[in-house]
Length: 419
Image 1 (cartoon, one colour):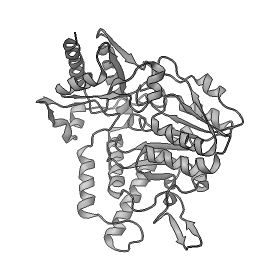
Image 2 (cartoon, one colour):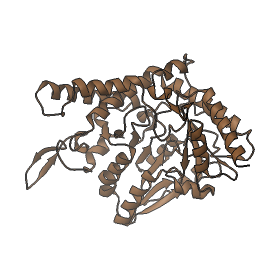
Image 3 (cartoon, helix red, strand yellow):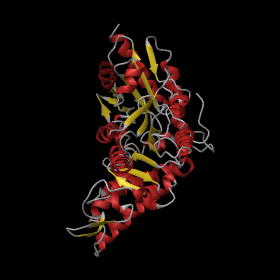
Image 4 (cartoon, one colour):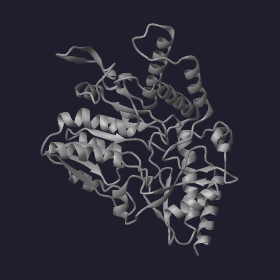
């Protein structure tokens, strides 16, 4: 399994003490059915380390107030901490300016913001939007809604049997009517890492902006939005060791300034009369109402934690876990891996002959092993690969080889029950 040189290959060989890291995660001490928890559902939500929990408690206990406009101590403190988290996220993804970082409720909210703010303003009847077969429903449904409203058309990049995008077919979809591209960075169902940098470059040569769904990328690799040159990049905090209900939309400032607001209300305005409203500057134009202040500050703490470990070290450890689990599962008769692209990260989807994924998940849970079963909100992928659902084990930097062994032993138990 080869690596993408710019994203996954560690530049150094840092010391990686997984047991020391695991001590930061209280939930990993949990017993499930009298067995140690083996948490392999990280693609759905990662767990939260104690420093992030402590930061949330400190905010709630000593800093809580509504932000902006308040002149008292708590409001000024909360505002400063909230904006400091924005700058941490700017650094984390290497945005040019902190005003290019918009707090949202998550990836889905961020994509909808782009659809409403950019798509409804600049995409019209007869225009075309390019998506891919790999997309999560959250990067399909909003664009379908827009296409239905505007009379636009969605074109879809196909995949091969391994779960890789057919880039030649992607390039053939472009024409004078192409107005937008939406593509995920990493597949949540298959782990495929898409060649987004070259895809962005191809689109830009034709004057087409690109949105990247990065929900499954930012927890596992170093992301540099300036290097990628993407126009928009969306991700969620709860997959990044942060709280739920918080996410990020990165957008190039010149595009954000041209966009219309997605939501109206307090703080996204400069002035309001019944005759006219003047909108605030970015990023505030897109952050109507009281934001998730605690969650934003918690996400900043999560970024601090991850950078303290090092994204290169995280990527290297997770790739070792994936390679080891892939090799072990290949030795099990009747088990087929779904998604065999040569460039993958952190996700292992599979089916077991004669056993429904829900039964696999239920029996693994009896062994204390948490996996995800179902269509993973990518029904077009399941249809293309001719599987109704899969079982998905997804790894994080706090997982261990011993946990992989427990997972494989659990699969052997599943097979014994159904033979």
